[in-house]
Amino acid sequence: MELSCGYGRRPSDNSIIKKIGFDIKEGESIAILGPNGCGKTTLLRALGGIIPYEGNACIEGREIRDMKRKELASYVSSMTQLSGVYFSYTVKETVMQGRYLYCKNIFGTYDKRDIEVVDECLASTGLEKLADKQIGELSGGQLQRVFLARTLAQETPILLLDEPTNHLDLKYQAELLDFLNVWKEKETVMSDGRRVRNTLIGVYHDINMALMVAEKFLLIKDGEILCFGNKEEAVTGENLKALYEIDVEAYMSERAKLWRKEE
Image (cartoon, rainbow, N blue to C red):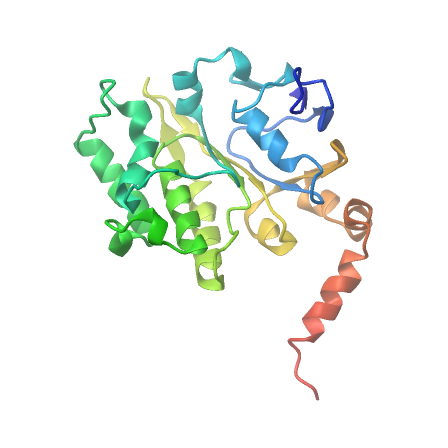
């Protein structure tokens, strides 16, 4: 793919992402790293069909912008930093919104399979006991898990996650990473019966967490690609220093000392 996107009247107006090109293979797990404001979230929104783009971005040879909403929703589900619900729903009702794609009519009537999937998503995100609670009563971390469960309920082979561990405590961060590592090794059965390997594309601020879940890394700075490749070639001290304008290795080494006991 090679695309430009932004928030002007046209995607090329005041581009945040500036004609960057890279390819993602089915079944890969990609981590997007970069400083604040570099365009990470904008790129995810373009790949999810949320904002327009110029250039080309294809899924199985089809341009994302040419796909109907329902077709795109069968391939891609997104959880961005702007995920939210602005009405008074319970946790289970919110997660059930991820099944709207599969509704048989315009009234949003759900069947037994929808309920089973939602229950599985609630269980995998540790939300079973909160299923009947109003989302307005939840903490930030609990809300993050609700939005993740809603995204998973869509049952797509491509998952776009923007800061998925945001607001989560250490326990749930670890559980989420374990879950994603299992999910990315699975396949999704499409409506035509084809089995498609799962692909994960995530934005991360925590480099260590990204290293735990991704095989390839896309480093973005000022809307352009600094590096794209496997972890060994992309996540180097030199690249990270150029990306964040700080000696990341030295910084992380100093932080690690805080955990060491004085001899």
